[in-house]
Length: 150
Ligand SMILES: [Zn+2]
Figure 1: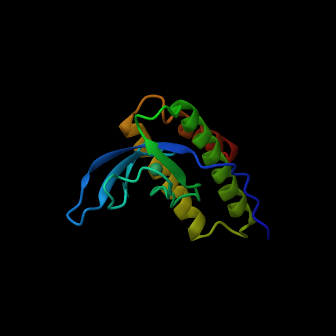
Figure 2 (figure 1 turned 120 degrees about the vertical axis):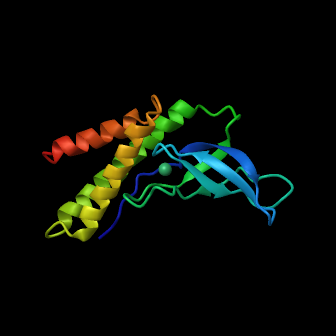
């Protein structure tokens, strides 16, 4: 079975340095474009923190999300645009997960686990209440639940 990914590029996420560990590794906080969380990533152990390249979102247990690319938060990136772009990738990933669930003869533990994790993420979204940045995520969720008749 061929898995067709229409991902053009990774979304860009704002990163900032939070400190340096004892072994000299830079520690970065990255505002996840998919979920309300701020994920921790390493920034190498060079003279300066490495704020380039892609990182795996730590929230991607529920659906397979494309990795994001990090950039210093003070860069001239259009974060709103990146956020809405990430939301479209999230919708695609959810669609893919839903298709996979449909192909299963019966919803197995994997599907239940996936749904559970997605719900936990959504609950966290509501609790954090960060204005704006999660509305697309919630909309995707609500649309998904409507379609599956919940
Ligand atoms: Zn995340």
